[in-house]
Image (cartoon, rainbow, N blue to C red; front, side):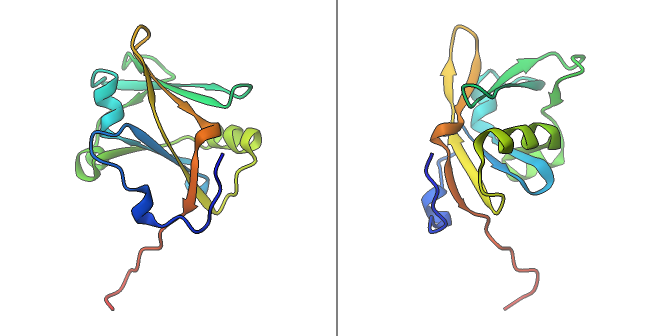
Length: 139
């Protein structure tokens, strides 16, 4: 797992067709790019499968009625091009297993398992970077 506080934002820019996620400790959020949803067939909801022993996270399509699923709808998805999902419990489990720096964000690209139609993220291959600061006022 690469850790670099000197990774510039431009180095973490991926094309719209790249299926990636960003995981942040702050607020327990996972940002999922639209390409992940296209990869697994544009589901109406998704479910996370976490394997602490292998340090892998799987995103799979799920039925909207599934109590473990998260809907793939909303203003944030349409506006930003990615969906953010808050799951403090999952993020806590990930940070315990990975021992990541809480001040950094971690990005990883999916591998698609076609027979199972899931997106697999290997957390050992995550790229760490500083969280960009957003200025509230005009310069």
